[in-house]
Image (cartoon, rainbow, N blue to C red; front, side, top):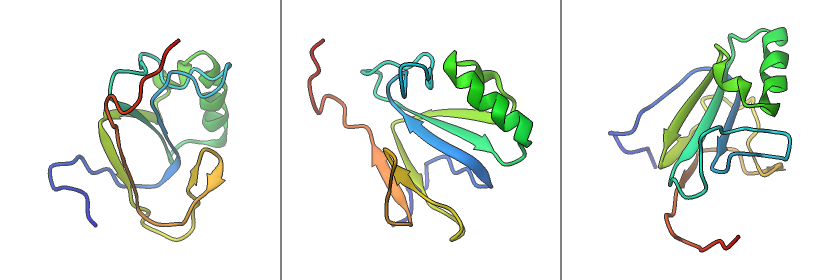
Length: 118
């Protein structure tokens, strides 16, 4: 199933594509500065392939304080839904660290689908 025609489409070679809703992936990984649990948005973090190994290391180390958002090879797109469609067979897709079936993957924010009390 193709993505709707009015969606933004980005293609290219990426070293990493990470989709987040909360601000932190771990206690020491400030992955999505400025996001909130109820903003209704995914933060799609893309690390482009033009990045050298040193720049890759620098961007990963900057995740601790959110500095990766200023890295020239990191792009962040905020959206309510996304579709990942691999263009080749030589990559892997995982969800929460578990490898999933290779192919197109689509997700959308389900606003108010559950209540969190804290």
